[in-house]
Amino acid sequence: MNEYFHSVNLDKNKCRGCTNCIKRCPTEAIRVRKGKAGIIRERCIDCGECIRVCPYHAKTAISDELDVIKNYRYRVAIPAPSFYGQFDKKYSRDNILNALKGIGFDQVFEVARAAEIVSEATRHMILDPSVKKPMISSACPGVVRLIQVRFPGLIENIVKLESPMEVAAKIVKAQLGKNSNIPKEEIGVFFISPCPAKVTSVKSPYEKQTSYVDGVISMKDIFVKVLAELGSPDNTARYSAAGLEGLDWANAGGESGALPTEKILAVDGIHNVIKILDEIEGDRLSDVDFVEALCCVGGCLGGPLTVANVFVAKTTLKKHILEAPVSSIEKMPPKSFEELVWTSNVEYKPVMKLDQDILKAMEKLEKLESIYDGLPGLDCGACGAPNCRALAEDIVREIANETDCIFKLRQRIRDLAEEMVELGGKVPPVMDSDGQEEDG
Amino acid sequence: MSTVRLSYPIPSNDFIAAGEASSNVKKILSQIGIPAEKIKKAAIAMYEAEINAVIHAGGGVADVEITAGRVVINIADNGPGIPDLELAMTEGWSTAPDNIREMGFGAGMGLPNMKKYADRLQIKTQVGVGTTVTITVNFA
Image 1 (spheres, rainbow over the protein chains, first blue to last red):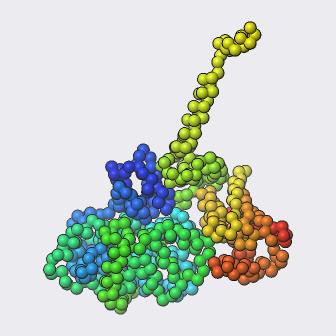
Image 2: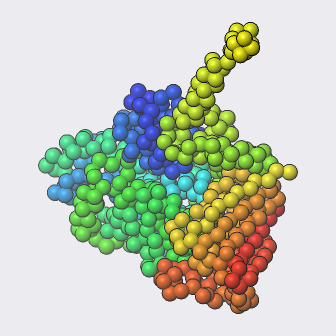
Image 3: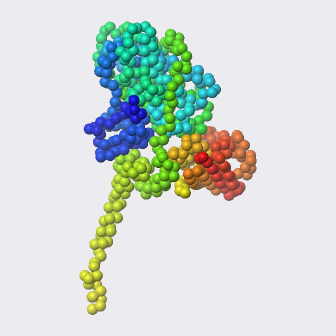
């Protein structure tokens, strides 16, 4: 699909043009224009931070409606591990998987099982001295895109292994291809997602040409339906197979916890992630071989498309983890880990660059610095840009004016008013009577 | 030929604000469109010099000059100076006090790292007067 597909979107009717989202966006990708928050598409990394902070729920994620499954004869749901954290503790994983199947799927397959395979592949990679350290997990697509636009020096450190979602979809399709005569095009595999960035990953993948996943359905959208199905008495068939290692991927620290080394660092929350990536890029993080970085506080359980409070969901998941076997992996060894390696690569997206030409960019930068010096430095956001520096940048990019700053505007009005008063005090010489009186 | 000149005060004994100047320069270089690996060199070398000024010299001033071909970073302080420069350039040699080391700084890699990442490193130092470190990173 197209390069700038984004899941994160704006509901114009709900947006009041406040400054909440522009100030929280980690790539300064939002500007308020004509009372509405517009997203600069090439800068957006789909982290969903704006969805979380918008008090008017105007920021939304485009995901597939449940109805899309009807386009396929055989429908498979692959729920993210965080899905189990959304429901009351009294329900077992099998209850939840049965209920999910009950809303219209022919089969369910846990992404947590695929997560164990990715963990196993990562364990192999971490022992390989030719792999660049610290390895940075690619589990969070928001973090991968953040690196693309802000940390080009770290692209080499990204773990180029397919995500558990992709691996799960691939396994399902391979198994059905072998054990059934359902034609390929009639099989639909749907990811049950906590995360808008995953929607983008499927519609516009960076690691390969096309995704194995046929649609991404938001946990929020199906929550009520699944809840209703949970009441049904015969939802006890055994579908759960994943071990605790796979389930723990829903938590911050889960993925890295599965690795056989102490030299790990787990960071969650996009603004914390930026600080750590800064440290790595500056060569200031020693003794760390693997970094698990997740956009959302609490990891995927804190995803913008989840329903339960992240901390409550954590406790719920803990129960499922305690009940789970250690590992399911020996049941399904992958043929080879090379199969999981990306077939294409992520590239640096220099979206912060002021001009294609270095000399022109330098001129713009000089202008930017001098404009910035003249701005009040309050970072109020009333101009529609997230801070004074961003406004200065917008001015040199010719998408804003200096008088967009209300303080600059007030100063101009004041100067003008003073000039008017001064001009008003001047009397033309023919009407000036002072001189005559003195003479007389 | 256009030149961008920037100047940043380096605070004394403030490890949180230290590193701000190099992180600003990093941002600016990427706005100009300098290749990522050159930005990395300049940012790391400058960060080390900045931290040194904080630890040893009670702060100072960073002056940065960017042209299309290179960046020249000048970090000047009025600190105690370096009595034996050759020794100071040795990896692992440090005069940082314990309290600084406890914070994870002072591993004796400052000057060696500057030398490693700068294309040209000049150090002028006089005991009791101060130190000026000039880091040059070429873009081509």
